[in-house]
Amino acid sequence: MKLKLHHVNHATDNVARMDAFYRDILGLSTPEDGLPTLEKKQGYAGDVSFLHDGDIQTHLAQRDVLAGFATGQIVNPVATGHIAYRTDDLGAFKAHLDAQNIPYSDWGERAVAGWHQIFFYDPDGNVIEVHQVDEDV
Image 1 (tube, helix red, strand yellow):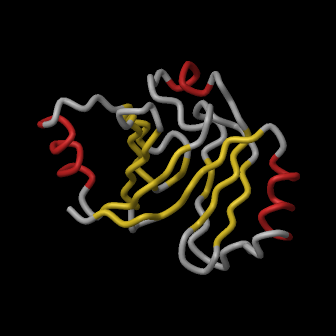
Image 2 (spheres, helix red, strand yellow; image 1 turned 120 degrees about the horizontal axis):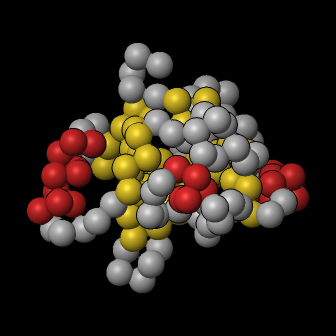
Image 3 (cartoon, helix red, strand yellow; image 1 turned 120 degrees about the vertical axis):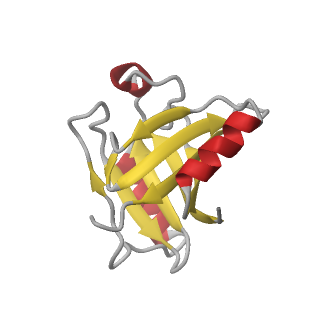
């Protein structure tokens, strides 16, 4: 089970303003490939901007404090934002969390087509995402 930093997500009330800042001030741009397809009818329909520095993506997501309720999940990744890791074996990682008694919300592919996502909290309450990509998408 390998983990690799994939993206940092900032929740915002103004995606366009944040997008302009990260483009103009930090020089980020839209990735040419690997952009996820949002699942806007499964509980989260907010606007999202996808940027990158050539290696790591930055996702700017419209804040939705009710997304957890809409999806039936405890951990809400678009209330305050999160950091995300990609894994090659999500089942093994979930077993690892279970063995450590770390609760998590399994969003499946409710937010992004082809990405099976789980979310959990670190000891200070920061949200962490771990996802695996379905290579068939």
